[in-house]
Structure formats: structure tokens, C-alpha cells
Amino acid sequence: MTDVFTAHHVIEYPGGYTRSVGPVIGRFLTGLRDGRILAVRLADGRVLVPPTEYDPTTSATVTADGDHWIEVGPRATVQAFTWVSQPRAGKHTLDKPFAFALIRPDGADTALLHVVDCGSADAIRVGSRVAPKWRAERTGSITDIEAWMPLGDGEEPAPAPLHVPAEDEQPVTGITVPIRLEYDRHEPTHERLRGFVREWFPMLRDVRFTHAWGGPLGMPRDWHPTMAFDPATGIATSRGYIGHGVSTTNLGGRVLADLIAGKSTPLTDLPIVNHRSPNWEVEPFRFLGVRYTQWAVGRLDDQIARSGKPPSGKSLAERISSH
Image (cartoon, rainbow, N blue to C red; front, side, top):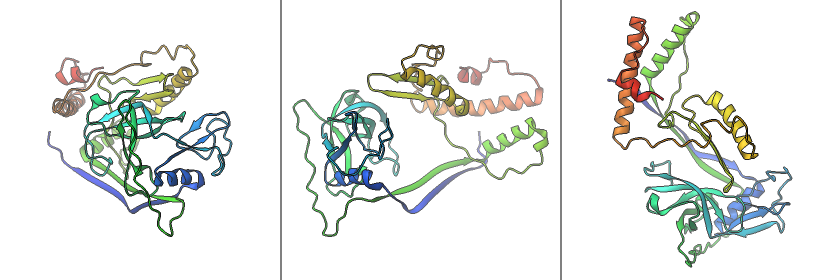
């Protein structure tokens, strides 16, 4: 199982990427700098946070001034979450386990995506009450909220530290975001794929491949995608394509359209609708199993190429990877 070549690549934009945000998002970010969560009331009465420049239903323009701007929160409710047990330096804003969550501030009809610092996965659930933990130094960014914290019954949210504006301080009109991409280039995998292409399409045998790209896949344990819609939260999801996203995204879109519309159709009766995949094995058994399977399946491919006979289906690798 010796790797011939694995290279770690980093692409970074020096100084970050600076862009304008427009007057609507600019007012929202200026509110965060001041320790306030601002939202807009749309024509149909719904309250939208974060605000957008256009009504998502009617496409009517949302203006940056007017009495349709209101303050929401700071109390809020978790509508959905996923637990991050191993934060990555430079990728996540917290250096300890946390939850990514959709958080709906009181007074709003929509949710914003942020992080919840609650100590353990057992301390958060759908419906948990949370409040923002504001940074002392704020610049007009979504990270002016350091994290959302659990809020006990009858507990008052901590107020935002006072922001003292500089003499030349102006409303927020732009942001600078760091751009850093990291990926591993595994040459044996790329060479094997090039070999498959030449085998399947002999006319390309002498063609030179100038580019190759690869990366990790998020794989469900049972290799089954999932499409689901929760009417209570309004959250729809289509995921777990196991490398077949080009075709499965089309199917997923049609399934979700029927689920959201409340229709009962042959698509909504598919076994992948509301399917729940089992958890992967605990580490290091997951890692060892995946690496062994990759190596063993590669050997099976070589044996098939030499013998011309199909696999028996009885090997350990085939049983592990069967679905």
C-alpha cells in the first residue's frame, strides 16, 4: 500500500478578497458592528434576516432606508444543526468542538447560519434557545458575533460591548475575506484514471492529459443518497451523491420539488426519500477500513485485467464495499 506520490497544494489569495456589499447588506453589517441584528419586513409581512436586495418571493427591490427595517433577537431558536467534533485551524472560527446551526432570531421568519458554542453535542437540539456572544472589537462582519451561546430559561442575553466609533467611521460598504484552498494531489489515482480512459477509448491512447483534479468525497456509510423535506422548519436537503452528482442532482431537484409542494408522486415514494444512513465506524476503524478497501479493490481490478474473469464477490473488500 505504498503511495508513489502525494502532494499537498495550497492556493491563497494574498491579503484576501475585497468586494463591495451594496447598501442593503451594508446596513445589516453596520448593525452588527453596532451590536444589533437588523432585518427587513417584506410586503407580505414576513421578516427576512439576513436581508437581501430583492424579495425572494416577488423579486421586488428591498431599499436600504425606510420603516421596513427592524431589529430582531437577540434571543433566537436553533432550527437545524450539525456537530463539528474536530475543527480545522484556519477553516473554522472556533478551535473547539461546536455546531453549525440555522438560527432564527426572535421576531424573524427566516434563519441565518452561524456557530453555536455549547460544549458538547448533547447540549444542543432543534428548538434550543441561544443568544449571541458579541466580540468586544467589531468591524462590520458576520464574525462580529463570535458564537451563539445556550440560553437558559429566564436567562437574559449578555448585551453587546459598547462600540465606540472612530472619528472617520463610515457605514460598511465592503468586506475582505481570506481565500485559501488546500487539497491533496494523489498521482497514483490520477494515473489509474488516465489508464481507464485510454482502455475504454483506444483512440485517445496518444492524447496528453494536461490537467487533473481530485479531492475527498462525503460518502454515506451505505452508499445511498437522501432527499428529505421538513415542513415544520421549511428545510429541504438532498445529499450523499457518492460521486454521481451530475445525474443525481437532477433527480434530487425533482424529488424536492414534489416534497415541498406536498405532492404524493412516484418520486416521493422512492426509498431514498427520508432515508437515514447509518453512522460510520469510530476512528481509527473507519480510516483503516477505507484505506484497506481502496487498496484491495485496486488489486481486484489488476487481477480482473490479467485474468479477464469477473470478481467472485466473496472477497473481504467486496463484502465491505457492497451496497
